[in-house]
Every structure is written in C-alpha cells, then in structure tokens.
Image 1: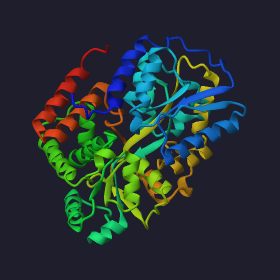
Image 2 (image 1 turned 30 degrees about the vertical axis):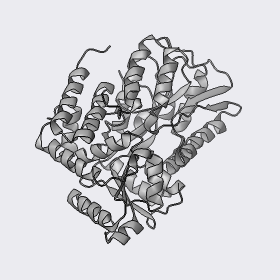
Image 3 (image 1 turned 120 degrees about the horizontal axis):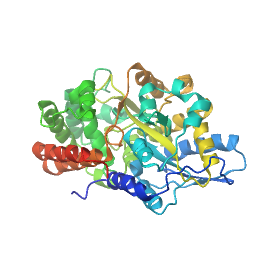
Image 4 (image 1 turned 90 degrees about the vertical axis):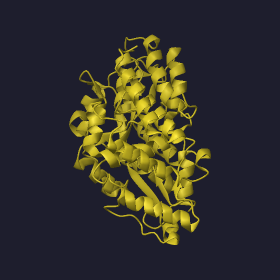
Length: 429
C-alpha cells in the first residue's frame, strides 16, 4: 500500500469495524441532557470556521444557556478527525454530534448502530418533503433517516484567476469549455512562466477529486451510474482516456503542490500564484474569505465536459446513540434546516441548501447558478468523499489513483480497482 493514501480513507474502514464493539445498540433517552453539547467536525479554515459558527449561532438562539464545545480537528476531508473519532468510538466515548458525509458514510454508521435515527427531526421539520430526493435517500437506512445535511458542494468545478489568464493570453473559460481546450490553456499558461494548476496535494482528496472530475468528463452521467452499480469496466477505452488526460494534467501541477493543503492552494489561486484549480466549491468560500472578488479576481466554470452534472459533496451531522447530551444533540440537528441558518451557513461555506424552501436569491451569483444546476437533474454522489461506494471501495479508489500517479500504468490502476470490487463483495465484518 502506498504511503500517499489518505489516513481518512483507512480510518473510515476502521471506524465501521470498531463500531461493532462501541457505543452500545440501545439509544440513550432523548430526554437525557446537561447544559452542554460537543460537536466534532473538521472545519477549521477561515470559511469553514465562519460556516460552523453560523450553525452554532442558530443553535444558541434556540437553546440559550447551552455551552457548545467546538471539537473541530484540522485536516482536509476529515483526515485526522475520522481517526480521532474511531478512537473515541472504540473506548465508548462518542461526541454528541459529529460531521460525516452523505451516502455510504452515514449509512455505515447507522448499520453499526452508533448513530441514532433522526426521524423526529425530519418529522418536525417536514424534511422528507422539503429535501432533494437524491440527498434524502442518501441519509436513509431501512426507511429511517440518520443524519441532517448542511448543504451540497459541487465538486466538478474549475476555478481560475482572471489576471493570470490574461497575462498568459488565455480567454476565461465559459459555457461549453472542452477538455481539449483546457489542456491547451494549461500549456499556454506554462509557456507564460506561471504555474498552470494549483493542487493541495498535502490533502490527498484533492488529487482524487481531480481524477474523479476527469473520469466524469469521460464516462458521463450514465457511466457514473454504471460505476455506482458496479457495472463499469475499469479497462474500457473511456477509463483509459480519463487516465491519460489525468496524467497530462498532473504534468501541469504546481511544483509546490505536495506541500500545500487544499485551502493553501486556494489562497494561492486567489493571490495569482497559479491559473486554475479543480476543487469542490469549498474553494468559493475560501476565495471570498481571502478577499478575492467573484467576476473580477476569479471565475468558475463546470469542469470541462461535465456542465450538466452536479457531483455533490454533502456534509451531514449525526447524533451519537450514546450521546451524553441527547436532547441538545437533536435540537442542534433540528436547527440546521432553519432557512436563516441555511442561508448564513451556505453563504460562508460556498455550498447551497438541499431543501426546497430556502430562498437563495440573496446568495452570490456563483451559488445561485450552482443551486439552479443542483435542482435541474438528480445530483451524483462522490467516491472521493465516501458517498457513492463503500469504505472498502473508496479505499481501493484512493489506492488506484495513488498507483497511477506513481506509475502512470493503467493496468495497475485497474488491478487495484478489481481488488477493491472483490473486497467490497465480501460479507460485512
């Protein structure tokens, strides 16, 4: 196994295994409460902290006198938070509430009994009717919901610095931007002496997101759904094309990429240190937080070839079965979907609401456009963030991308995915 693999991916598998012996299977009474609430997340960058504070402000307004303990653990995509959480679950000391992702991530916790059903929250807030159907299904297990989404990030986004492109003689991308045009523009930027592609390689999920976007560009929405059903042939011409294009893009990556986190890479884009960045729209919140101006300093377009798709990264909060402050935990989750909280949170985070009745007209232009795409057709779920496929497959996907980065060998990539598919079909441990 490569050392490049994200600790978060390995930990995701460990969390599910450890949960077998953790936290008990009998829900703590929802009336159990003190005047405290512990919330664990991995939101520590400027925009993330502002968004998290918006959730806290909404909760404090409805639950005055409750002391919120912010247990945020730094690390992109939860690389360290998931490890710490696994340890706490093992010793039967869960936080009241923690952050995870939609789909297989939250469903895995539910399957092991370490998080409680939030059906009461859904009923009181009418979330089954209000929520996007795809996202609703992604937090359900056996007909019951187990997490409350904060919003949806669009992952298939290409960001660019307008000044750097202008200096390189490159026109800003617009609707219909092709992958061939993107590769040609990367070459022009490199010829101008600027860094073509920012990449926060210190957070491995950023490289996997880049491949994920390239794969979606090649196989399309139909191919993505085939992949989720385990019907995608990993040695097909479509996958080979995606790998070749991915390899070319890596050749244009910032030489300093391996030493930068995702938010540092985004700040570098904001300051004109590179021309492009492929990154979910957490980048939007961070660009604004860094003082960059939409439409003047930076712009965004769908990743080439994915214009009609919304590849979603959906953050979800869950409540522990053994929460020490169960009543406060459910109250916190219940406040997330309040329209005023939704607007404040998503404006800071760069994401968009997943409930229908939040008026997004006050959000900036980028987010309004993102919301329009989100509701136009069913969103797709990410592999990089453990939503679309099992933790075992997600781990194999990271390993396969790592193998290709290291070797540029498409057969070795496919071998890693074949191993992951085989492991995914084993009985649950």
